[in-house]
Image (cartoon, rainbow, N blue to C red; front, side):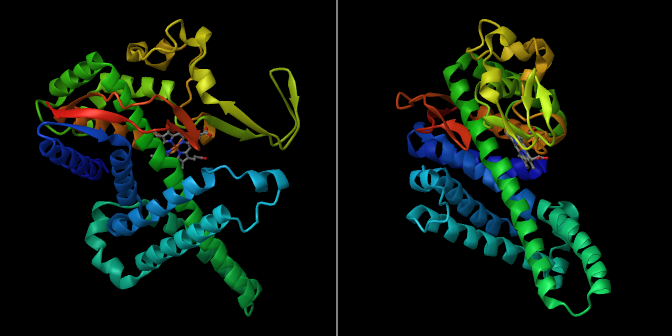
Length: 371
Ligand code: HEM
C-alpha cells in the first residue's frame, strides 16, 4: 500500500513542479482539488486495484452526489416529501443510478475469469479492497444459495431478490469506503498545509525531521514513516483543530441513563467532536492555538481527559481506516515538504464550513516555490 501512496504523491509533486516552473519559480496553487485527486487516486488503487481508472470515474460521480445531497433542500424538509421529483432529487437519483451500474460493471469484470487470469500477477502483489468485499459476498451468497436451493428449488423470484441484495451490499460498501476515506483524508491534508503555511517555524521543523530521518530528498519508507514524530504531532493537532467528522453518532439499543439523563431506546445521540476538541478545561488556555507540541507525550499528555480526543471516533466502531489515513497523510505531506516551501496567499478566507465534513468553504490558496 505504501508504494501506491508514494506513486500517487509523486504525481502531485510533478504537477506542482510544472506549475512552479510555468510560474517562473513561484506560483499560487489552490490545493484542495489536487489533494482530492491524490486521495481519490490512492483509494481507487487500494479499492479497485488494476481497474482503478474506472474507480476514479466512480469516485468523481460520488463526489458530485455528495455535493448534490449537501445542497439545502428546504421544500421537502418542510413538507416531509423527500421523494418529490425536484431538480436536486432528480440529479441525486440519476447519479445514484449511474454509480450503481458503474460499480457493478467493475465487479463483473473482476469476476470475469479471463480478466482474473490476466490480472493474476497484479493481484498477487496487491490485494484490493473490492476483492475483499467480493470474497465476503461470494462466501455468504454461496452459503445462502445452498440453503435457498435446499428449501426452494424453483423459486426464481426470490433468487433475483438475493442478487439485488448482494449488488446493494457491494455498492453500499464501495460508497462507504469512498465517503469514509476519500474526502476526510484530502481535507485533513488541506487543513495541515494551511496551518503549516501559517506557521513557517513548524514547516521548517518538519522539513528538518524529514532530512534527519530519510536523508535529503529521499522518499520515506515504512520505517521512516514511523520515526516521523513531529509530522505525526502536526497531523494530530490539525485533526484536533479541524476534525473532518464533526459528529460521532450512536443509537441507543435500549433505555439507558447517560450522565443522569434518561434516554429511551432508539434515540440517535450526536457527539459534537469540535466541541470536545475546543474545551478549555480539558486542553488548557491555548486551546484555540495551533500547538503540535502539546502532543509530545501523546494524547494523554495533551489532554486532561484523553477520551475527549476523538477525530477517528471511539470504541468498537472506531475508524477502520485510521492507520491507512495516517500513512497516506504522512506520505503526501513528507513529499510536499521535501520539495516545496509555501505560505498562505492573501486570497485565503478562513471559513470552516460543515458540508458532511468540516472543510474550508473557499478552499486553501498557497504561494508555492521549490525548496
Ligand atoms: C483523516 C482521515 C479520516 C478521519 C478523520 C476519519 C474519521 C472517522 C470517524 C470519526 C468515524 C466514525 C467512528 C465512530 O463512530 O466511532 C469513521 C468511521 C469509518 N472510517 Fe474513517 N476517517 C478517516 C479516514 C478513513 C479511511 C482512509 C478509510 C478507509 C480506507 C476509513 C474508513 C472508515 C470506515 C469503514 C468507518 C466505519 C467503521 C464502522 O462503522 O465500523 N476512514 N472514520
